[in-house]
Image (cartoon, rainbow, N blue to C red; front, side, top):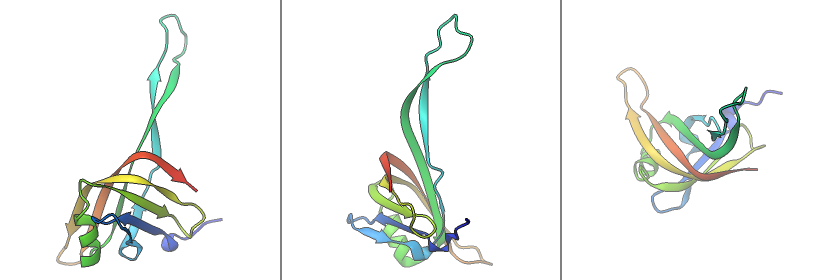
Length: 129
């Protein structure tokens, strides 16, 4: 069954460390999930490669309609770590953890709406509930 993305929610700590729901300003969350490092352990005489699992890593980005409220939250956390909560499409699954805001951009084209985008580096584990 397909689920519509319009019911997605996203919150991030503001510069004071308080969780702030900015869902009404977001129109896209790109959360590709986590990647895992692997270390090769293949010996010289092996016919196939072998590996051991390593550490997980992940990034995500958000974007949407710019507003002074979202600007106050995102501009104030660039380079800082905070707690995020992402609930895609209606609340059946929640991804939560800590992330560092690595970039925040604003765009205001002459023929369109002012928009924002922000990128995050996940630090530590992501809890999926």
